Length: 379
Image (cartoon, rainbow, N blue to C red; front, top):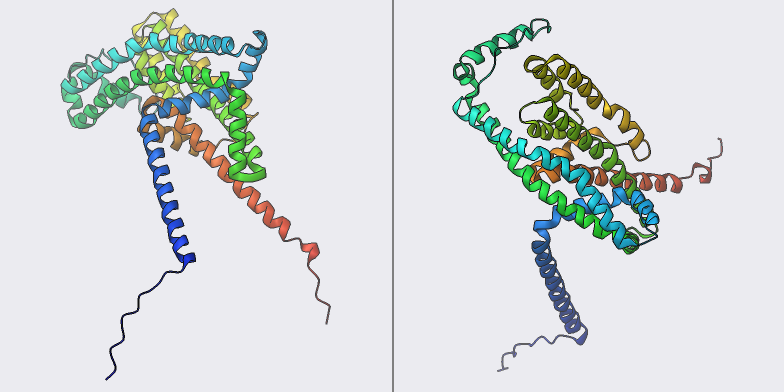
């Protein structure tokens, strides 16, 4: 009888063994790289929004920084310090002035919505307003005499509004700190702008090849256009709105300025805040103050119609829907600073994506040249 066959032991070839070892080594390297990137992200995460906003500020103000650099004979450290001080005085100063009224107004509004303790004066004559004037006057009259009864039907919604305004005020305080940190980060980036420009171009060329430099230039144009034409105008309108209300004696001027900032950023404008405030000043203040505030409101509300075409005309066409989604999404995700960062990043991503599509379409058209096709002979 023949003995049973012994089990065959599979022998790995040297080439296959080296391939397996190489795959294991690559997997270990990728795992360590992913772990390192994750740890770095977790460390930087609390400052990520401020860093991104600082980079946006640095790109937006870089042309002005070059002029400041020439004025101080090329001393980058001095120019960066002067920029940071100027930005803190010009931007943070008015914000700090309005922050006190912002918190007080939000707290009082929240308490009033929560317990029905808001005291409203009797309404002025609003019957001259078409369609809604008489209805608004009747509701206002009822609320001035019995606020709790007038607001009982919409009590849940009003409580949510009060809580939202209080949360908005808290986020605004954190946003001021992040804004100051972003200005300091922008000053540091401006001091190292030459090295940063070379690094960004090198990275873009590694990612997009020869077209990398074009994408970098497009990104700079988009950031500057959105920062100046959208965010810069919105911040200017909001600050002027708040300062005008503060001078006219409008309660919670800081809170209304913050709402004006939100409305202006999402392209609605500041008139929904300024016009009711003008009505209040006419009712509660003297005639001269009311007339001056009305003129101020018209000028501030129309400011975007003058500045936006000038500032955006030098950059790119910015889709309003993309700005709206980016601003609202950034505001929900990261607070006040996210209102700015979200709009810029989403518009930037949109423009880069469209540029990529246009280049692909142009390449397809160049590859299908109708002159190179031979015509069929007639039968």
